[in-house]
Length: 240
Image (tube, rainbow, N blue to C red; front, side):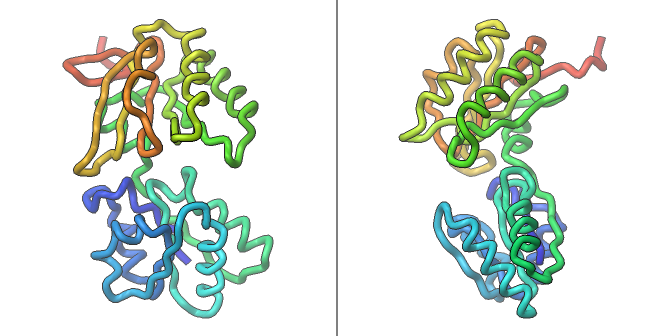
């Protein structure tokens, strides 16, 4: 079984290895929109799709079918090992005794795709933190935000805001304002690499005023991050 990261959704952001894994498969399993985004690769494949929050069900189907002899691709957006399906597949295979060989195929993560659109904000030490508290207690997320803010690391915030989750991003902003100047650059990329992509440059004092949703990724710079020729850059230190 392949667990494949297909990138942010644009065909140009797929890796050759991901396309080869899908081509070698007889069955492709994934979230409805993700399978739709790779329809050109699945015309001769059996597919199984399902909706949001059905990750475990999709993973079990993929493992069951692989154990029965299918060559299966289980699809993740971005990178399968970054908030994706790879870990779940390995956990479930071991816990439920599936005799299946699993190969993880790396993909372009949302953080990397967004950073490339903004410029070069991840040139130094950085962290990725999801603000979704569906699976991780909010108190734990706050502890991580505080540590990263204090360490002056650039941070990529996944799942920053939804209709029901508003205070999380506001709380994160307050934490970072305790450690960084108000004019610290903040980049917001919504629907990275999509034709509908939206790109916004702001700062720590004002970025909450921007439109931010579940398809957005927020990158908060560190104390050295600045805007250079209209692009967000965290200097690595090579140029003196």
